[in-house]
Structures are given as structure tokens and as C-alpha cells.
Length: 112
Length: 112
Image 1 (cartoon, rainbow over the protein chains, first blue to last red):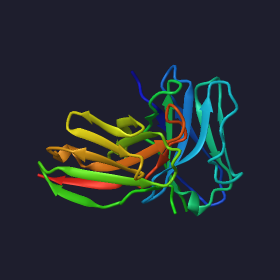
Image 2: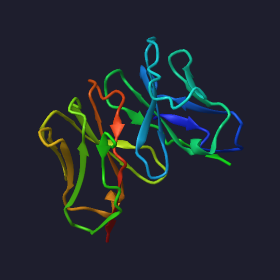
Image 3: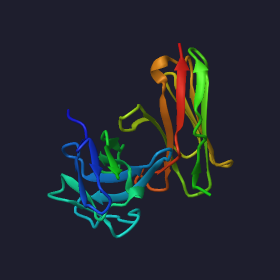
Image 4: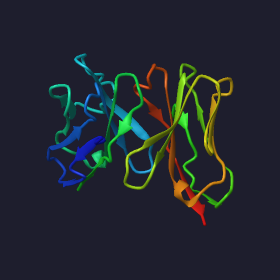
């Protein structure tokens, strides 16, 4: 079946602009995660959605970052007033509850 | 100090060699240990999943966990050029590997 998809693949924006990154999880997966991978760094946890529970936002680096998940499926990560240090690969993963996380290909964000 | 330390490499070995990849960690609460493989411009894919201490073997891959030393390893036997990728260790104190904490990743090249 189809895996996790993310769009856009690449995004170039100017400092101060807002960006929205989209994640389509594997159908039926109840859990959805966002991670950030900066150059030369490992993946950094951002936020976790599980079913209808309140999301775990403990990894969001600042209040410029927010995410929502509509209808228990598609998720959008929004970064407001982007800064150059936000440049990274943003990865989404989904899982069937407490099982293995399957990752999408990521969105490469470059803030000029 | 990072919770999970991993030598970023790069590591270059000839085809057929045995490869040893390692991570150390500081959080004694970690119970679930994983190794992910990430090809260039792709999302990570799960290779090995281990709970608590011990060894696990899957084909040419063997994962070892030594909780007393807070040290995990991944061994690749009969390495192939197709094994060339970045290998990320990850761990969690939650069942089902929620909120993974990743190492920086080791970039591995297998030379034909």
C-alpha cells in the first residue's frame, strides 16, 4: 500500500514568511509524529498525535511552531515568521498505535 | 551532553567487511532500542528493534544492547555496496517507541 507522503518535497522561503508543511499518513494509522533533521544532526522530536488524545507538543522549539491533525488523518505543521535556523528536513512518521514508526521522505525547508 | 551519542563518521570499508556501528546513551530509563537506515534524500526505515538487553539477529544484521554499559551496537556482516547509507540509532522509554531519541547518525560507505 501507499506509504507516508509529504508535500512539498522542497520549500524555499524568505525569512519572516509563514510556511505550511503537509503529511499524509498511512491509511488507518492512528499515531502521527513530526521530527526535524538539521544538517549533521540526528532527528529531533517535535510533536506526536495519538488518536483523539491531546497532542504531545513537548518537542516544539518555540511558539512559532504549531501543528494540527484534521479528522485523525492529514497533518499540517506550520512555522510562523520563519528564521534561518529553521532550515532543515522536516520528517513525518505514522504508526498503527504503539507499533513501528514509518517515515515519509521529508520536506526540505530552506529559509533565506 | 546529548542523551544519545553516535560517531557521525564518515566510515568507509571494503565490500565484504564486517561493519560495527555504536551508540552510547545516558538515560537509564531507555528500554526500547532501534536502528534505522536512511538513504540519501529518503526517510529513515527501521532495520532492527530490540527491547531491553541482549542480542537480535536478522540476516546479515545483528543488534546488541548492553544496558549495564549504556551501549548499543549494530553489526553488518558481508557488507554490500547497497548497505551504503546513514545509520541512526534511536531509543525510547515508552512502549511502542513513542518520542524516539535519535543519535546523530553514522554515514557508511561500502566500497566495491
